[in-house]
Figure 1 (cartoon, rainbow, N blue to C red):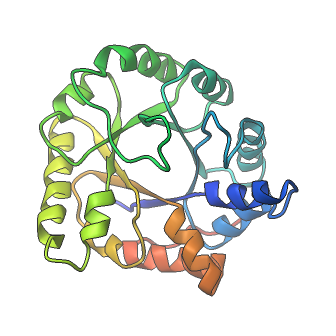
Figure 2 (cartoon, one colour; figure 1 turned 180 degrees about the vertical axis):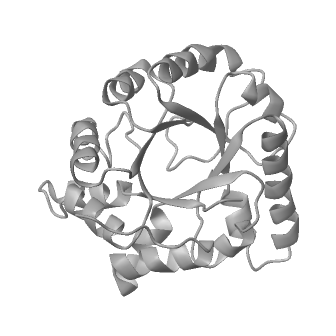
Figure 3 (cartoon, helix red, strand yellow; figure 1 turned 60 degrees about the vertical axis):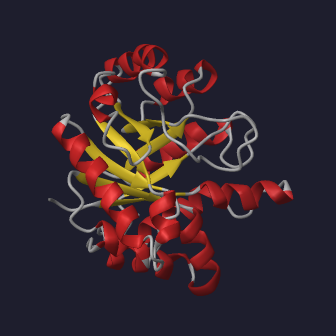
Length: 252
């Protein structure tokens, strides 16, 4: 397995900014700071309620990365809804991760279901791929539907690692870890690469070392929580160390 990229989700920086109705912290400066610590990618997840990253952040973040951080991948997470997908198509990020949304949810907490979601996903996947955007979809750590997920035309799955993360350090750790590895292996056998995300942190990331097909982890909440204690640069460095990934050389 090659180097696994760390993509930092900057939604919570935007959430803090929005809470005061001003531009502090500045989202683009936060992106710079995260990348200065060696992260390989940036993730944003605009939601229709715009409670953190807003629609008017999408273009500035994409343009900032292209102008000042060439080679850094932008991953846009979003629900499969034309209001947002149209904006993704216009911006053309490196990757779009489609995530199912349940009304009223606090955060993403489940993956797509198959065969139920196949027909609604396919047109969006086809449109994104035609625009040259890599497509990933959010999936639970269950090996059974991976072949059906691959049949939509996606190139990657992002494994929902919440249950794995919550079990870390408990009697359920080994079982949940086995589930992640079995799902990843099934995804690889179905022809897909693997991303992972949700409640990953500097402690449990070591459990994903050697995960079949793993290319990227997306981390936001744990990073900013730790940043409150040790700062943004140090918090990103800890995640890279836990992942076993060398920091990306920084260029402003």
